[in-house]
Amino acid sequence: MIDDTSGPLLFARYAFPPNHYGYCGPEDADGFFRSGVTGDDHGLRARARNFDGALPHLQLIADAVDHSDPADILDRRVVEAYWLGSAVLDQVSADSIRPTISAAFAGRCGPLFTDLAQALAAGALPHHSFVVFCIYPWVSMLGDPRRTAPAMRVLDRCRIRSGVVLSIAHDQALVESAPLTWDEDRMTVGPVVTESVRTGIDGVGLTAQIRVGDQVALHWDWVCDVINDDQREMLDRYSGRHLALANSMLAKRRLAVASHG
Amino acid sequence: MCLGIPGQVIQRLEGYGGQLALVDVSGAQRKINIGMLDLDQQDDLAPGDWVLIHMGFAVERTDAAGAEQALQGLELMGRARDD
Image 1: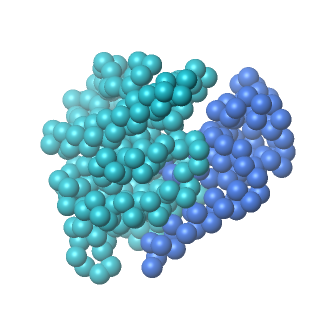
Image 2 (image 1 turned 120 degrees about the horizontal axis):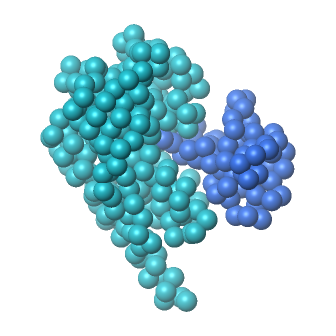
């Protein structure tokens, strides 16, 4: 469980899945995994600095909750707030979010990227779901017949989502989870389905022991951690906030297209 | 999770409807899907061309200058956190 897990290891549990697939983070995913398995916090901290997309958000949260100098971006409270969400996020002032996020990302948001300034003005917080739904390019592809299905697949897998474990066998677990759906206008969390996810490699994983009936956090097709009801509520709350922001941006885009069409 | 990373096309690959390419990303070879690019941009994608890659997909064609700018953006974020 999260309670006795170090901040660097907690970060690794959530960051490893996309790193494993080569989407981001350090080149040596195997080394990242080994550092997590062996509890090598020094190695985890060094490799965590390669997750460029997460760092500005971690820094914002750390500056709000950790008053040491420099603030620890891998403090466990910071890491949990970024991936799952917590009341800590509400301590981050909008005055600090806008300039920091704009400086880090605005110059890199080309025409494919969503309107970042709009999301910031509407109350975005430094949570992983903000990155997925409001900074990355995938939401802006929705509605394009050729791109919508793969974009929805990426958005669903890239967000942190919850599930309940039905069975476990050989580095795999069967879980019930609710995927994102697209109704031609907006994204919603759809009905529960059953999916197979990974728990480790050759019997070894970064996550504490998982049992049937556990509630878990998922990233791509991996189990990240066992979470409790409060943590799932936080995940739903902050993910829902940024999902609503993304849907609002899509609605404004439709209006703009209609008014010009 | 991360922002677009520049990659230079090494070769187009067979299969998957012609939507796969092998690219060089900072010295590492990666297989990517080019199916999210505009169709005309897919058709003439050739060895030496640059793309911005996100989650295993090429999401934008760019040129050497654009690739350099994207790399500098990543490095700038790294420097900012070291300050």
